[in-house]
Image (cartoon, rainbow, N blue to C red; front, top):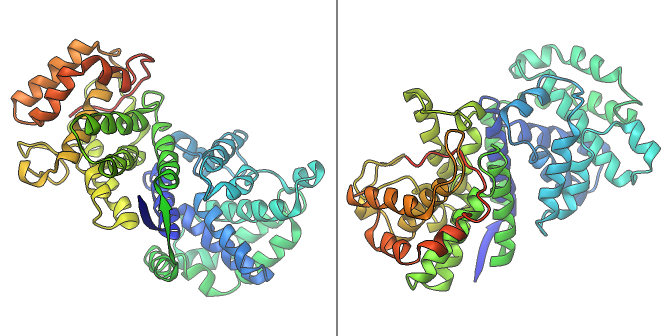
Length: 416
């Protein structure tokens, strides 16, 4: 099966997901990408190199999953533990053939220029990575100011960065940034509405490509790894939901192409959870009403991000509907049975089963019989599809194993 995907939209969607980790600091990756692009234009870099730079800028923080780590990166000019997210991000990208060539840029985007020269890093890699480092640190300096205030303070920002020319940053890159950033347009273009408009225009110009299932799966699995790294209790959650959803779908006789789409939706279903603060995901007890509402938002954010990539495609809808119920008391759209296709019902059951199988901050993994009892109670209450649960009952041990029951990996995701 072939999927027509706009790679620019895919990178944009992934950047939006990663930016959710900051909770309140959206668009950081996109600002870095666009500012780097402007400096590269000043340097006269080729179109292909600028394209790689833009994508790497959008994705440079794809190794960041926790709110705490994000906090250090946006408040400290040179954080001592920054390399960890660079290495994780590079590893994520290496597993995606379409994006693997960006991995070295992400790996070195917090490495000092002097160190890369000393260690013999290829200049073609070092320059791109260092330009990302430079504009990333500029974005940290200007983070609390709007475009007009930032323009008025530009010399202060540039003076701070200039102090590190030759040590942290390549001097020629600092010179190019200083020259390009003298224009008001450089700063005014960072206004959130204008930035999003410019990005949408670029996406509209970008050509779509045909991807096979394996290519889209590798991209979706990268999303899943980033999502599941959000908390020590969510290891492999999205991957296991994807595999269990496919196992149930096959068992119910769904077409193989439908099972492919359902697996992709499973990888992506918790994308919006990147926005949920770590303290809520890892809380060792019941959530407050406010915390539960923050948790509920994740399904809506999943839909908003995937809509950019797939439009009203079934993959986006199935992923976003995983907390809807047949009785209409689910979230975030409060759909009832008539609005929930069988694929969404399967993913909902797979998500619940996987959450019950995994450890939580306040309890361990549940045995198969206990998992089934909870799911049957929810079915009796009119929330879950009885056909899907009948399959679970008749293949309980297999479903429990696919969900991760053998390894007992952990998750803090609530069932409700």
